[in-house]
Image 1 (cartoon, helix red, strand yellow):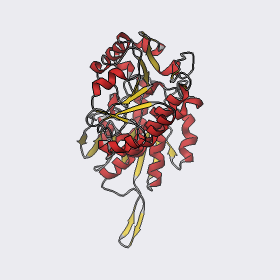
Image 2 (tube, helix red, strand yellow):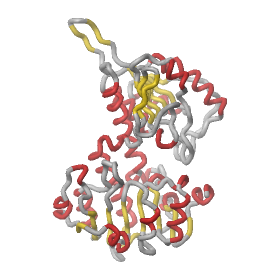
Image 3 (cartoon, rainbow, N blue to C red):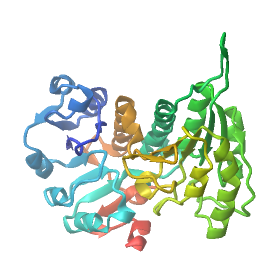
Image 4 (cartoon, one colour):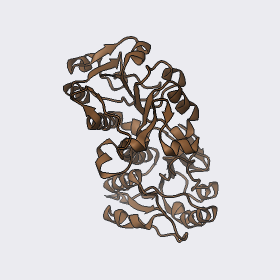
Length: 375
């Protein structure tokens, strides 16, 4: 079985696999092909991949059409799907709920597609859960980026010239990214508060040394996989009122709230931003799905009434080497789980609880019930 790893789109600092993970794939008996200058952004020369058994491709289109499996981070261009051979497998983040044309092309080309963001949050799939691994690093990067924008130190400092108070950080949304943001801000010495619609996460927040902010918005629920369910308009308004005072006292606000398969809820309003202190920083981690913060712009720094709004869509890319390592391991674990060493091919059992969730198209049909319903 030939696996091809193409270069990512322009501006992407991460790669889908590092040499050490390629070696593990080769040891399983897979034929691995890497596009020429694949690791250039991370200063990884082709020679490093060749040493562990990978072949180097100088013809991207030819490799697309000859490979059995294509692995990457970002979704492909539609024309690239037409180059893939019938019966091949494409694995990446696909954003299938917002990309109906791409899903249709996979179907028309009879290419089996696996969407990494649809890996279910169950114990057996944790080692494949790329959404969580990237969100974890994104939460860390959000704090580091915020600290570089803030004109204050995070920790309290005792100096001969006086005492410097610690910065106050407010994290909105306590999922994987939010928990890592809390932990990182605490390590840097900040005073941290956090809010989530699910009060069940209060214990996790407190275990990291942060304060859980309670705002009464009525009954809230979460999905089977642990994501917060969408709030009503009235609940969002109540939430905003309760958070306004906390934001006004904070030096850094980090928003992580996203609703799976839907636009991100608008949480931080312009009124709330205007109430914040000059020099404060807001990091909108949901900017790529519509944004939690009014006025945030995709991949831009916006300055609103003395407040810096950070709208970077690829925060894991700020620590690209580690993000590439864990993503490549997620891919390896997925392939290894279903690799049939006798037939030397991927075992496609759609009754399996992992594949039944993450496979979008197979044999010319949309086989994922959620994606089929959304289309």
